[in-house]
Image (cartoon, rainbow, N blue to C red; front, side):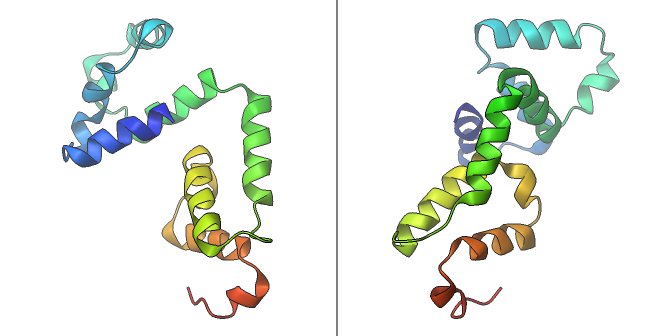
Length: 129
């Protein structure tokens, strides 16, 4: 959720891609700030510049979300189905889960395909992607 909050700030303040890491450093707290400082101590200025938000957030997930938790979240995301939920409810759930599992929806097409698979089959036929 922290990553989502930071990304929300990027959107609200139209943060340019090349400024996202600098901006994020202001939000790091306690051990995370120490982890980043230790990690980047050996980086040259050129290496620091090429760390993108995507790379940073992926590194952060690897370090701070245990593998078992990532696997559990991935499986719950893949198992998400509408069943008796309303379309509004399943859409909300999909959007929330999508924040935790971005690797499954790297492109807009992949995101649409995954969303469609969550819907009941009687609704899928009315949706085109």
